[in-house]
Length: 132
Image (cartoon, rainbow, N blue to C red; front, side):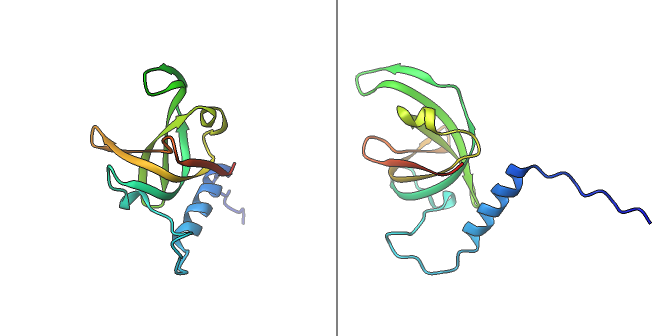
């Protein structure tokens, strides 16, 4: 009897599902140092202490020359197990962050634009690429 062919699943899909399920299954109580915010819990105009996202897409960079900032800027979108969020990338982060990366934003900001939540590191936050 012939066997049925297995469905083709892309490696990135498996990796993303694995990472998101691991995030969701983390049942240990977390200390304030390691507590991770979730997209569904983000509130506009409130600081982000620690947020981990899978980057779904990074849009082309733009050059900005304003009174507050001069340099590269790019928009991106990311998700965790609870929802989608827009991301603003600044300076060297524009070159470092690619689609499929898992990033951690610490000490950043959260805003609402056109009813959608947007997050960024701002001037004082940090962005780290955890996994590629």
